[in-house]
Amino acid sequence: MEEEAAVARLGCDQVLSILHLLPAESVLSFAAACRAFHAWASSDALWEALCRRDWGARAAAALAERRRRGGGGGVPWRRIYAEVALLGALSARRVPVKGASPRPRASHSLNLVAGWLVLFGGGCEGGRHLDDTWVAYVGNGAGNRSSAVFSWQQLDSGTPSGRFGHSCSIVGDALVLFGGINDQGQRLNDTWIGQIICEESRRMKISWRLLEVGPHAPYPRGAHAACCVDNKFIVIHGGIGQSGSRLGDTWLLDLSNGLRSGIWHQIEDTEPLPLSRSGHTLTWIGGSRMVLFGGRGSEFDVLNDVWLLDINERYPKWKELKYDLSSVLGEMPFPRVGHSATLVLGGKILVYGGEDSQRRRKDDFWTLDLPALLQFESGSKKMTKRMWKKLRIDGQCPNYRSFHGACVDTSGCHVYIFGGMVDGLVHPAEASGLRFDGQLYQVDLVMA
Image 1 (cartoon, rainbow, N blue to C red):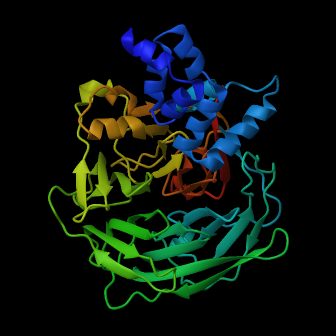
Image 2: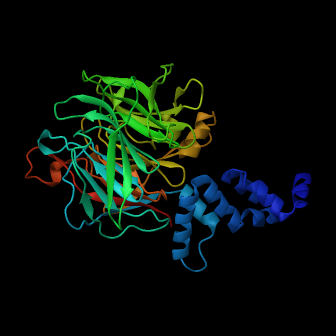
Image 3: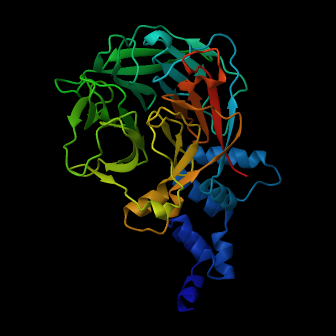
């Protein structure tokens, strides 16, 4: 009671300034203490500030637009926060396309940069590895829903050279492409910068150039995992090397020279380390940390382990997040390779698709909750059951696929999926039972 009286003597502004610094769970605990505290902790301004703090200004602007469209004075920000935090469903649609479209493919890259979807390369029917670049304008205004129909534009082809299994990461309004496998099966280790040049309305081009990286570079590879960290570094891990063996090394590309040049550094191998693998994902989660998930190991086993890498330390270290399977009540994705893992609104990694060791493709969507993961990493077991969650998908669900491309818009609310390897069972005339897909899907987070 003395503590409550002490808090009561503070002014409302003082209390709110303190609540702004607390985790959402602590704010809710404060609200449960008494009626006066509940009123303070239910402030719309407070919960809007928490949304902005935890999920960023662009995401908060998108949520404000969604709130405005709801009418009736708007949904309370506290409820919006809860709906995002407890996300349980997605809504998907196949996007109609006007005019020419990219040919079906897999193991390509798909990014959303400066309001444009950018698709490059990949493998297609006949074993050819593509060198074409296609773009489609989707916009980047906060809260804007994409147009009902998209129009693809093909840009000049040939640079970079044709390849599949490369990585392509966003740094500001530029792309950084590394490695891949060409038509002759040669593994590559070149690094390219693609500068986005926006021209008149709904027109753009990409200026590609080789990045000067000095004498040291990662070993040639394809099917590796990569992500950009804070627009300053590219981190890559693993992949398939020249001999066909799977790699387990980690490299960092320092771009502090403003994309004029870069320097590759190999991160020292300090136990414990993830198994060598390919077809896995590496997702930046903010700050200096990233999450590795899944892939195919050296013995062709398919994995579903989760690792955390922090490059902020003097000696960056990997840490495996091991947990007792009985503690998550079976709520975790099966092992997979060739999936996608995208950071979306609400501090969650959205994992979709992939295939298992028998090449059975998947169409499931899962979220990995980062607050729960980081609590678990720090030693707390309280939120273990919240780490993984399988989502319901409404509308036109993308079918079973692997080695597709996926990216998210700046609000974190809309995910785009293109291509991949899909089961041919829905097309019995195709004797192989396997085909490449050329459809574009938009998947939206559903908040009640």
